[in-house]
Image (tube, rainbow, N blue to C red; front, side):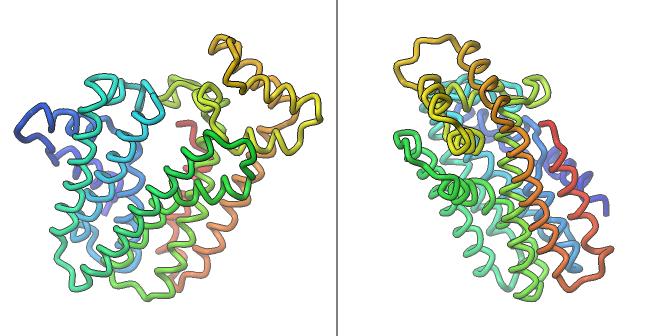
Length: 321
């Protein structure tokens, strides 16, 4: 089976419209904005590699993607992000209250799809889904906590993105493996593959936010800088900066700064360039990718079964959006 093509067909054919239209239209809009559909792709690929019919895990794939999009709707609202996948975010196109309520409904719809699975280990799958959802929310809270802190460490940041981003990729893989009744040890190895892949994915996202092209990236570049986000790039810069450069960084990221958006972004990027932050971030991405590859290698399956995940990881490593 061509799983990427099946994922596309699955969501092309899944409607989220219902009544009242004011509640469901933003959900339909969000779910059909496109995107990489990475999480359902990982889930179905995991089910397939352990010998299960991927179509049997389709309800779980729809559930994980619906949950992911719910987090984006609320995340965009909390971050005041105007764009999502190159289009107006829900709170921009409608309003904040709509984003909250439609997002909440998406969370409930995700559970509804998950309960459509015909699996004798549904309790294990639901537990994995719940743990994943809680982890993502914990990560989002840490991210918000960091906004008012000036002593965030790289280690704390890596833990935050592990929760906010990586556990969702790892959870999708684990649920796919559970749908296929994979051995416990291999399910855990696949989960660790997902954690390291997710860390590399988020670090690449940090890098693209600073150095990507808006038309390709699908979001305004430099938004993390404008929002004073504690990203890996900023924390690494603070670690490497001289006293005068540290003072400059604090000045750029000061709440009292009256600089224009473009002035702030160009100033910070110029300092990042002097500290070679792009290179340091790329090195960390490559370390996480190597750890993901090592975890995948230990799974007790023929290499041919693991090749689709390896290729997908390679694509994510070199993505531009």
